[in-house]
Image 1 (cartoon, helix red, strand yellow):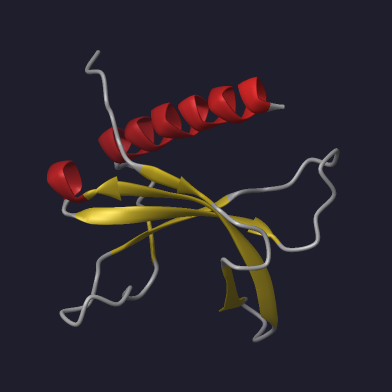
Image 2 (cartoon, one colour):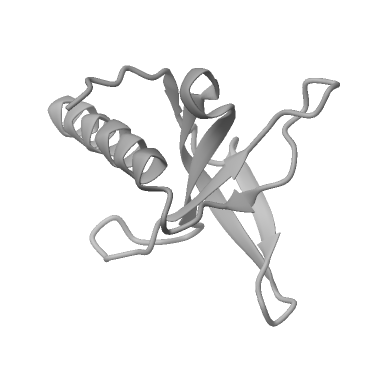
Length: 107
């Protein structure tokens, strides 16, 4: 197994939010939980999103997307990650688990 090291930023509440449109056309607000730099390995970055307003003690589904930066340096479109992209999912899981351990150590 390859050891991955990635830079990631812990989201600041209320400062890092994004609005997405769901399948029914509704705007849904999310908090950016974590961004992962996967440029070197996969040529794109990743973002993990939590529904805004969730309670800390409730189970929530984390949404994961990839994105590439636009030429002007701004973040581009969010894209779903194919289920069969096993290397990408493995890297995301490893970084997320490391993030959870570090957050758990702080609390």
